[in-house]
Length: 221
Image (cartoon, one colour):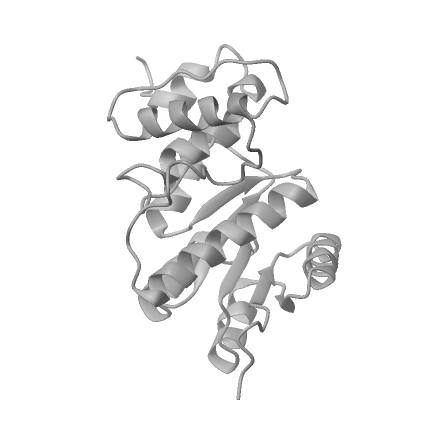
């Protein structure tokens, strides 16, 4: 009989041994059962032998890309979530990944906290789907926030108000104050929570390329 509190099984797929080793070690330290593969063929073979709750896959790999693996999982493994990682992050690749079926998208380098947060989000979505729960998270307890002070309650109320509308929201603040966390809370508290959340670090995109990265580019335009 399987224990109720049994940790999830996670498959890490990357052609770089160092990346596989680091991610695997970090996840194992949290109690997850970790399997690894170096390419798409190896990952598919592993998935045929061992069911897993989550696949973390690199985007660019020899012979076949991570998108091929994502599509295979979406077509054949309905009870498995996917997180895409890549060292060649762009808006286009992020959109392509989530369209293929990735739940989250992490550009390298990412912190341990970002990795753990992405894993927890994906597994929570899987848990809710298994339980047949489709309601969005409660707005007064936004995803990832801690705090009960009146100032935090005011932030929670603003998040709930923004999440209830379809209006475009601008979030401002100094670096490190949690702007992306607020954006995630608005997204997952809204009616669009079942769709992927795609963060884009505009500061990492050269000014001359920002428009083509965000809106596309036509040669000669």
